[in-house]
Image (cartoon, rainbow over all chains, first blue to last red; front, side, top):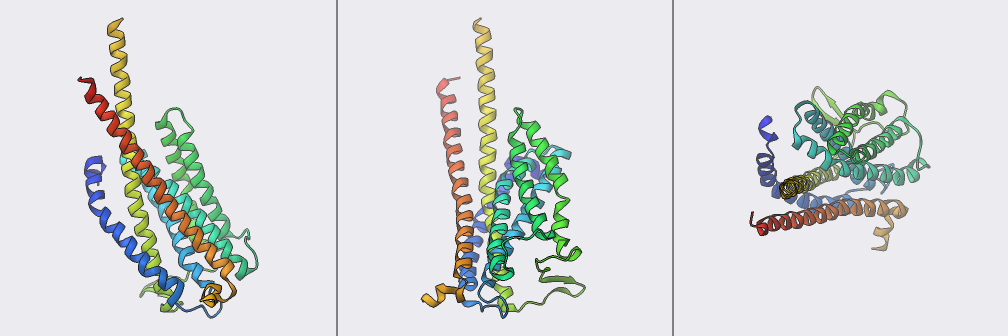
Length: 251
Length: 55
């Protein structure tokens, strides 16, 4: 595990898997979008609006997965001071905020025709809105300190405290009586079961895969960018230090 | 064709969803690539400046 804490080693692995995840993302989108938008049948109750599910559920899934990634990164950063773990969390955060925003907006655009309202303060929707604010808080807190390391630590602590919201989101549809429907996937002793027909599960799974691969591909690009930013900062600092030393020597 | 785009009367909900998600995913990708390019240029400039010092 600690082997991956070395930035060079880590980026070597990340760069090696990048073409695969990027290629898979493209392939899955090319396969998934026509199935989601054209060939899959309308739902017997929801009609064509079921097509919103093929992007709403993947957005929501990524919103949660990105938060999980960030919580893991934040924990590794606080416990072992792994800089890569912190950079991963920082690189992922804006993507998580975007996925959460998309899940909320597509949910509203689905809710209005199906429920007759854009928004209700039920447990699922409210806990998801809190997730959105947690992302915004994380991003704001990381930038709020003069000393960037203190900002990183504060943001990492916020992320860990906020992770209590993740199981709340997941179980909200079971614990409370929500307008939002419960999960269509049931994990039982005999594997994953679903009450939904395969013709609707297929585009859902392909799009889930496409979104997930997209996330990994863009995350690797963002990590490259974060590492470069760190190198630039270090180079500037050492340049300033040399400059100071030269200045003092001249005096 | 027009019937397809009408989406059984739900066009006003379905197409904006797909449009916004596309905008979001493409937007993140473009900002990421722009940031990466800008930082790569900045880093290269720093490196060549340091070599130029002759230190």
